[in-house]
Length: 276
Image 1 (cartoon, one colour):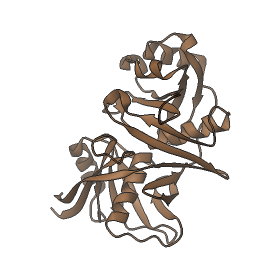
Image 2 (spheres, rainbow, N blue to C red):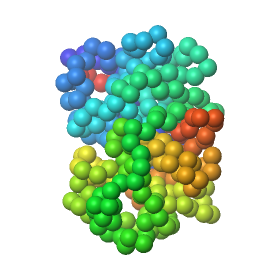
Image 3 (cartoon, rainbow, N blue to C red):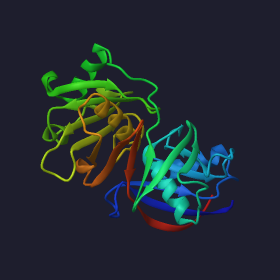
């Protein structure tokens, strides 16, 4: 057994307990794959990350991202939270942007005041889902077909399908049938007027150990690519997520040139050491 620096954060919120929690083990180069997976199962959070030395001179650090069930090549709130932990522990970027090495390759991050933002990775699948999948989605969300404004594959690694509904109230009232949705990863979005955000988002991940993710960076990244690219959203907006779970996540989206930046605040809730 060995002792490691450890942080538990709340991501996409500047207020503790209102975002999406993340566990980060720093200096984890000595841990095996099995030890990482076991620790991630033990934390029982949606993701746990392990900070490692980079394998390329282009990167400032490397991260491995684990759910309670598997390793992910990329995820959004672990990217922002791990970068926050690295900077808080004294990490110094080599250039104007921070470069994270992870399973999908190199991901750029930038600092925007008190927030961090990552450049959305390219989609690996887009286009309309087939009619059979849309029927399953409608049945699984327990809604009428006319409630659906649009659907789209927005997969940047986890397998997201986006579903746009007509209004925020419909999104917040959803009580899905997870058996019907088994195997699907859904991002549900609707416009919101009159609040401090322009869209309300929910992420349903049936079969991944937790039914709904509080605030989801990878989903908001791919949603932004679809919404902005199709003219459904402006080049800069704020998404609200986690409302139905008693959270207050805020995701800041901005298109700059060809890049879509996905940003948010992080706050450290636990800072200490862990024995693995």
